[in-house]
Amino acid sequence: MVGVTTADAIPRSAERLLAFLAAGRHGTMRWLEAEAGRRAEPRALWGEATSVIMVGLNYGPERNPLAALQQRDRATISVYAQNRDYHTLIKGRLKVLAGRFKARAGGDVKVFVDTAPLMEKPLAEAAGLGWQGKHTNLVSRAFGSWLFLGAIVTSLRLPPDEPAVDSCGTCRACLDVCPTQAFPAPYQLDARRCISYLTIEHDGPIPREFRRAMGNRIYGCDDCLAVCPWNKFAQVTREAKLAAGAADQPALAELAALDEEAFRRRFSASPIKRIGRDRFVRNVLIAIGNSAALALVKVAEARLEDVSPQVRGAAVWALSGLIPAARFAKLRARHQSRETDPGVVAEWQQ
Image 1 (cartoon, helix red, strand yellow):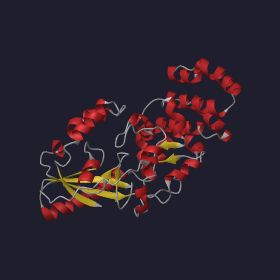
Image 2 (cartoon, helix red, strand yellow):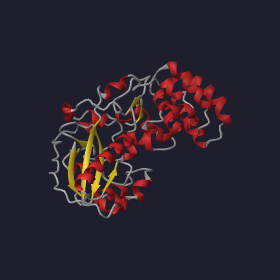
Image 3 (spheres, rainbow, N blue to C red):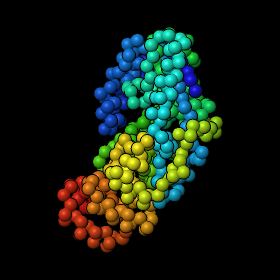
């Protein structure tokens, strides 16, 4: 998809972002605070910005992501992260597109994909690609919830497209399906309660109140995207580098055993690599604790000796829900006396 808007098309976004930050709903994402003044105004990024060409690339899955939640001894990974890192793919193609555009039309151009402080979703709505639904994500009439976004900012004044119209109506499926009630109200998100935030952005122990709700989600969460009725128009992506691979729902036992080198090798071209091995294995162990699979007890026990306190603490919690109290007490007696990390000691004492 492609649409055009003006660089000054989202005047209320700055106000909304500041309200989000003032409420503390960004959690530990301090980078949002650091770039808050520039984020809602493309011209703050680049003074010559006049028009913005927004593009959307479909990454629609072949299967409903919600079905994966039933296989509790296997991992559920957000659709967007099941293959290549989309940042690299889209930025490379945007550069080619922007180069051709400049050669034909003149003017200067810059390209942005997600990592720059640019509010892509409001700009995409202004450019007519879709609207921000009640779950705050973009919804497209043509592709449902499954669009990656990129931007070409140009110094040229281009005729803008009509903004998209909110078509959520009275539907609240995305709000009701959220396992952790991360939506205080329609069109509002408290990231601190969001499983995507907890599994990707949050470092250290995951708050206990959210662990059961995570189920087997080890990287991101697609629930609010997957239930959207507009997905009836969604299409399976034709981009092979974005399609889910054969191992799109790997075994938890396999993932828990990854050391640093194996993690880096396995996820070298994936967005998952950004969170690092320790945070990733922490998530896997939470899923193991939710699996009710006795076959995974030995897997969790092996991580009690892990070098990372974050991993050891998650292993303690996983075992507390998998084995009988008497067996857990024996493990505690063996390990707690030599544990030096206060957080892991606290897990043993819960």
